[in-house]
Image 1: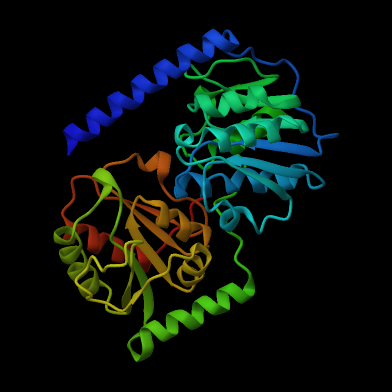
Image 2 (image 1 turned 90 degrees about the vertical axis):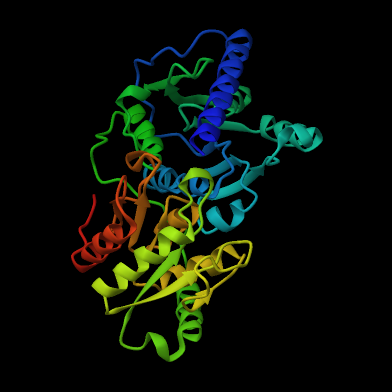
Length: 363
């Protein structure tokens, strides 16, 4: 598994180096830092160039949207995205206007890609933002857009000039906080204030539907108990197998008898915990988020559904055993990181039970 991970990392690094070389050939040297702050007045049309397509990355863009709505309340926000469920994620943000959905695999759909690029080029924006310090495609989209101001990170992995650049070395590690920091730094605002966190903006009706659905799933088994949602799936080396989860759950249940577990079923529609608990399944992102919102707490390894739980405003305990918890970990509200590196499953179960007994607020 580690060998596959190292091989994948080498391939991605090589791809970035090739893209970086091409960008420098096409668009010149890296960015020049601006001496003037980004204006807070006169910006009404904003474009965000966010090329990533994963659920977690798409959800972690919502803190930036919230920050833009606060600073530029009268502006419209367009988003370039590869997320095929972008409407479900961003559709409840009042200021979000148009979504330019690029194909998940652009090389297979050149006509769709070209059509969207032409549509973006037709518009004149006041501000275009490239929030990712690594994506060369995000920078290319920014450079090709028509805009008065262009904002992005000054990073060794980025090329092409912008009107306002912020050194990535000053930015927080967190994927959700970093784009907000970029905007605050460009404006000359303090960046150590509390950060917005992921939010899918469920309506009161959606939350009520989620509570009703969870009650139907639990029946009489959930009466008088707090409910912990467990999602046992993840991708690649983050996946914790059934042999890990069962001793974890045995230890958790012994330490937290006031909790009833419910399994959140993965997209392929099969229990990973031997159907040990009542379970809920949906491929509708907002319905799933509504049920997650009805939980008292949620836990899983680092994955997109973990970020969806955060975005549903459910106290989320993310279990980290491989990926960087400072970069991908949940923050804000009652969300917490469970550092499980080199720990036995039963010890992690007892640790999580103790954390739920006395949750701490993370700014």
